[in-house]
Length: 307
Image 1 (cartoon, rainbow, N blue to C red):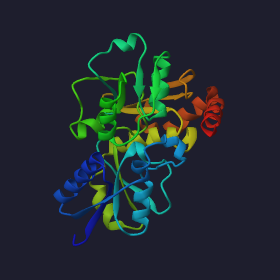
Image 2 (image 1 turned 90 degrees about the vertical axis):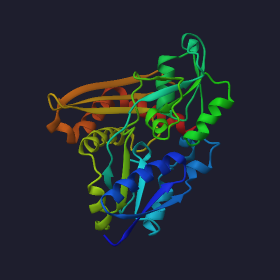
Image 3 (image 1 turned 135 degrees about the horizontal axis):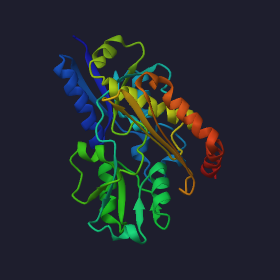
């Protein structure tokens, strides 16, 4: 146990909270650790929507480089930010027990706009498309930056509200009194989960992280990310997915969605299967969507984003 495990993280408050959570769990097991904070391109360039930057994994790339170049040993990520294909030499070493999976609407204390016209802020194509599908007469504006920056922008603008992941706000005690759960909105694949990655040839770190892995979260997020990868192999289309393990009958229930960017078209899938069928579930669900009009819709989405 003599080696110190260097934990790489972005330097936002939420990212540091996540890194410290992993650090504490490793320390409790007797491992020595050091936290190294790195700024990512996604935090620096705030004036362009993420999909315009043309990088999948914009928040993870800087840490990948730091790991490959030997500055850090492991990196902690919000799992929904991690591209489904990890860089060569880097492996998923642990998925921590999942927190709240829901999206929430943070508003100004008045929800009358839900029945009339409103302006909602979000930087996510998935949230934008699902919002416009449900509220076609609303306007959606782009919102970028870390959680703290986005909360401040909501205060400074006359928007009706903004959509956030509940887990992020809960982790750093930023969840205000004026919020409503969007239980109708299908979350991002792996939302609410944290992933820790290490170098493939680093047996010491992998052995340490093995103890932090939550098997149920690992299975459910695997299904969701497989669904995402099969549909589009990147993270720019409006795609939502959630898998749940039902203990009473040992089944996995899955809900997936693909929408057009304007939210006018929507293809949904919902299914429950025995737990034994989990390994291919994300793939088969995605194939079903692709054969039911999803292929054409994906082509349209790619054309829209290339304009």
